[in-house]
Length: 66
Image (tube, rainbow, N blue to C red; front, side, top):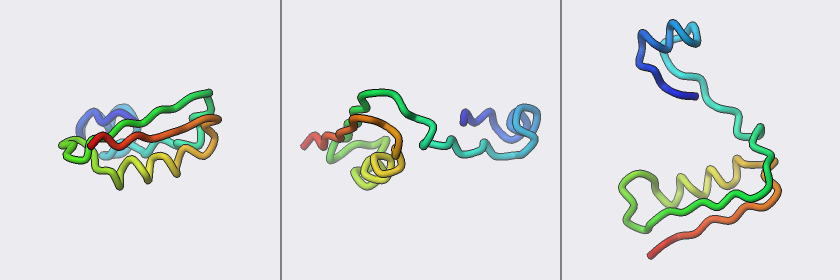
């Protein structure tokens, strides 16, 4: 879920941290994930874990850009 900061999260979600989004709810057709070997925002391991967590996505693929 979106993180609104501690005060915003308390107001929006009733807790100081944003709740985790249930990735099993993602059930649309095609999902393409891209990550660069030297990516500063995500690691290859992050994308592999996300790929595995998208259990209901019908077609999914991830690309590692070297």
